[in-house]
Amino acid sequence: KFGIEVPKSVADAMRLDTENGNTLWMDAVALEIASVNISFKHLDDGEEVPVGYQYIDCHMIFDVKLDGFRRKARMVAGGHMTEAPAVMTYASVVSRESVRIALTLAALNDLQVKASDVMNAYLTAPCEEKIWTILGPEFGGDAGKKALIVRALYGLKSAGASFGRHLADCMRELGYTSCKADPDVWMKEMVRPDDGFRYYAYLLLYVDDV
Image (cartoon, rainbow, N blue to C red; front, side):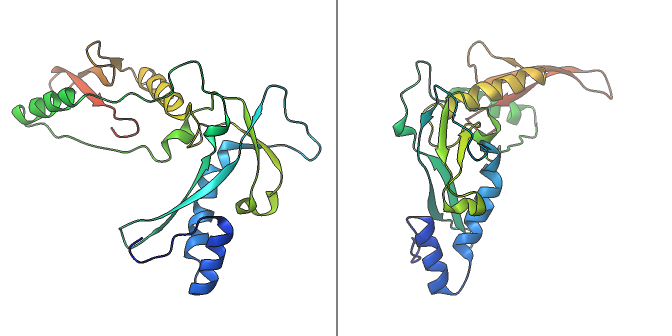
């Protein structure tokens, strides 16, 4: 990609770093492991996997980003190895009509529009499936150990829905109410402190984009 060879595995990434005389790919791997490590509950040596847990593989996928040709690594779960959950498996998104209405209201009232992104979004949500894996070489000294997956790791069939429900819980905790016309439009009654003017604050959610 962009003339840069993209590795297909961690071993391949190590080979490319050796050939290129740098550590760009393995630095990306280390950065990703630091982020996703909270998704794994390591089992002690000799500790058995709880009954009812399904085994899945996890692996790294690699990419090259346009911003300075930054190397990117992402840990994903082999969700194809698990049975499909009986409930909704995706995260809903705000409708285009709601976005148009909100931006029109902002423009007519000369309001500032702010946007944000939830970093490592799915990893903030608990995993709703009972699954375990064996840690790969990217985990260094913990490679080969058994671990339970406790966060909504990318690649799981239920990851999107798990994050959607978790984010909705967070919105309610912050005092926002979901709009009946569009459940991904959240609103909260506010009071302007300088003059007591009452208004609504609106948040529009598109998976992990706000």
